[in-house]
Length: 166
Figure 1: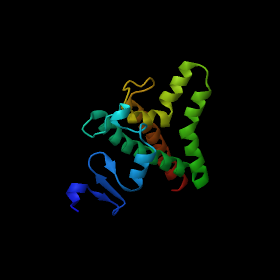
Figure 2: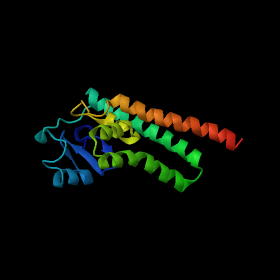
Figure 3: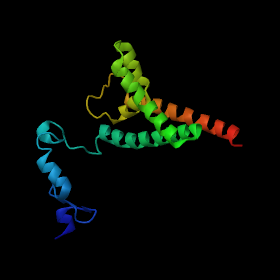
């Protein structure tokens, strides 16, 4: 079989493209059994994602930046805490407290503020590709909020590290 005619093989022969809309292997099984009528298909009103579209490109690049910023924030917290379990618990708290608190607050203004300035909600706004007017914060502004959290954590970690471990 010609590789160009059947598409690129990822990870050996586990996944092969068959034409423009079919996939063999485990991914094909998921596509055929679980996703019909529910996935990102033209039948459900979702065009196929393309990096030629600005929102898709922004979401892809923004997701990489989001993960880098979360790693920096985590490293800063880990240096500050100097304990693995404490750092993991602290990061889970930092990431999940604002969304959970927002769901418990009855005042819509405070709910919006918590979503807007919580590091996870703000940072993930960059992944918005549909309904491009998010009610809480814009995509790049949200990533900026997360960058501010990461910068503060890293700067504090450097200061504390130099004082404590000098």
